[in-house]
Image 1: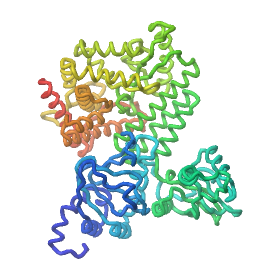
Image 2: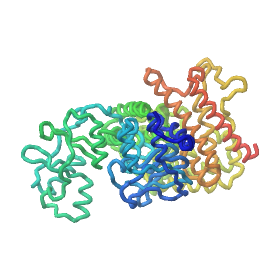
Image 3: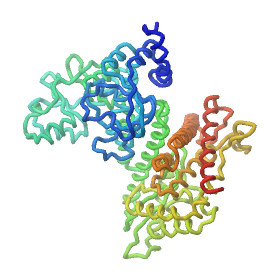
Image 4: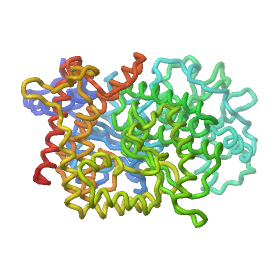
Length: 637
């Protein structure tokens, strides 16, 4: 039965309950528990830019549930890069980890726009944790994967929501990766630090003669208790350890370790068998795909000794994507992770080619164009790359280019071995037209911008998505600034780009829901890349070039349009949702093909989609039409 509430109070709570029932985990909770939660909530408002929670506010004492608006997590010093920030939207909650462990948050939670949040006091939060198994499970399993660990992840925050799901009932013995590293209490701090460095580990356990833990020294302790405290490193390690570390037995389930970590705010649990240390399980072992899968895979890539090894690791990228899909990772996270790993792989290929064939005698930058330049690579992608090099005083520009072209060809062929097919349009660094000095690139862009025809621009559009992969960024940044200064003043160029952006119309029919292909190769299918994504990509690129926006990703360009009032925020939100859904459908399709042993492509048959997917895809195409209508209006086409 629903808790005792008078009719008037129950009526007043209905809108709140309806909101909660649209979001996890509240939608899965018992009716009584949802009513209890609704009765305890208080609605608050935070203006854009206002800090909602931060380390300076002391131990967390409230749960915030975003009702309307957006909240961004950022470094306390305000200098965190965009890729390292994370964002929460309507229906999401914070700061669960800090509440569970009774500590301050590690990051500043700031309203990105005018934001309404529901507040739940600490005592009511504790009551809900105790009475609702669904809420308890949600809080303990998601600890450190979505919130407080976001800014400590090694890659962009878009990857932080992806975690390697370790079944919460798995015994801890199955998670132990290696023999525990330990030392005696009287060991000099210097020796303990040398072990941490030599073994590249994050903690060392201090044990007595019976191998029973007396304390733990972590990298955090090294900073706070040794470096900042100017501790004598010849002193015994017992002077700087955290004493009485938490522990469980090897048969204890993983969720007990998660709960202990949450309650105590520790990142490690000792595993004891009959009082003897047999292993250590860290928070990263329990939760973080990004810090296990992504970082370890990145490390393996950067240390690979051959192209063959890199080819095998490229297959691991695909398996990583499969796991992320299984965990519901967002499209932007998945695309960023794929691109980040492919960037690592490309850099390592270049390094291996430098070792094998000799490093060129001139400075050069390896450029990415197209989807890699936009951070939007999927499992099916070919090469679009080039080189920007500095002229050599000892050689002519053509002689320098002749030295670089064979080297670039080796790189292109090695990337082909790693699963990135050679570009059929020859947009590759081994093509003399894509291996240019900074001045030559300026001259080429100038020809496109000031005198190119619509047909020339059709082939040149992906070049405007350029970004550096290997080498110094400064020449590329200077080139981008120059390009944006030029494009913003060229109305003829922008109009032609707009005309081209309107060529790929979303495949919506008047009689049937979709216009599908009649070709023999892909009958009754839609090319999600050409007909689905290209309208968004072209539209966002056009807006970026016309308004001096230096972002290269489609979503980054759209968000910048919102920030600069080029597009309404609600309009941008709808465009982003539509674009990400089409990308999700595309990635799912490619992963299904890969799992079935088929070559991947971008062709999806709408009739084989379920009703929900069809409805969302139709709405996504409608949003593409709205973007094209905006382009048509702006340029009077």
